[in-house]
Amino acid sequence: MARAILIVLDSVGCGGAEDAAAYGDEGSDTLGHIAEACAEGRGDRDGLRSGPLHIPNLARLGLSHACEASTGRPLAGVTRPEIPQGRYGYGVEVSQGKDTPSGHWEIAGCPVPFKWGYFTALENTFPPDLVTAIIREGALPGILGNKHASGTAVIDELAEEHIRTGKPICYTSVDSVLQIAAHEEHFGLERLYALCKKVRILVDPLRIGRVIARPFVGTTETGFTRTGNRKDFAIPPPDETILDRMVANGRPVVTVGKIGDIFAHRNTGEEIKPFGNAAMFAAALEAFERLPDGGFCFVNLVDFDTEYGHRRDIPGYAAALEAFDRDLPKLEALLKPGDLAVITADHGNDPSWPGSDHTREHVPILAFGLGVAAGPIGRRESFSDIAATLGDWLKLGAVGPGRTW
Image (cartoon, rainbow, N blue to C red; front, side, top):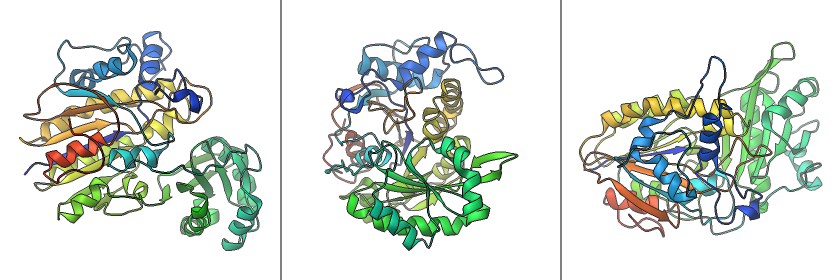
């Protein structure tokens, strides 16, 4: 029986969506602008990388062709084989927003049928009654932040005061999130998780997608660093996903990275959550190698987004893409006849774009495996076409409203 692995390269978009202007993102293009920057020498960094974007394995599978189908432009400086070896195309998001849950749920066959709630005020962001409730339920002396902010910047700004006062740092972004940062030792990791669980209940009536625990360590002298103990407290998808269908049919499921958090741990099977792209991909390979027939491995590689997209780090983003590309043949070597591998993304996060938030973009779709016919799959009118195709391939029946290719 066939197996499948689905890898989401978090934020690796391939060109602004038709409605990008409504999000302030018209002209954004994560992959295209990274490739352009590298071709022009703006992606160089001593000791890290230099020259044009070097992703020959992704290009061999059709990534540049997928980007060209989306934007009308091939990836600058990237090898473009005449005939790709994989299926290639791009997906258009029907869910409103440009956030992680919307993208992943739609990929899994459950487009978001409602509008998320957002905290739109840049300062004094959270409603006073919510702030009061957070302080009361968490038995806190108060909160810090209460604004839109970059996660790393707000920790640098307020960590010392947080340690001195015991007040957690609360902030948000253009996404439907409430993030809480606290020092693992001075505040306590389990205490932070417990606080986030309480806040999750408080923001449910506001339709906030995620409450995110952002633990960090360090001192004023050494600097402060976020750790790998991040945890997302999300609302569950409102309808069936491919994960639900897998479990209902008694199929084995392994999820790697933050997939468990994104789907509120509903039918997410064996959850593996190492820290960093390299460790997560290595764990995914190990899990897929031992995955029984009929199984499904669902992977998120988050560093593209958190470490490089939000930080507007073009060289770092390019180096991360090249590192993934170098390891990709390891996955191809594990594929048995009948297996299907799919690589996609959940939204964009153009590191050349103003600000530090996600960008509303199309996403590339690459599919490959022994016996998988190469060629274009064209424009897919919903990310949920991915779940439909996986459900068809794994003989689960139709999953979600998408159309199989």
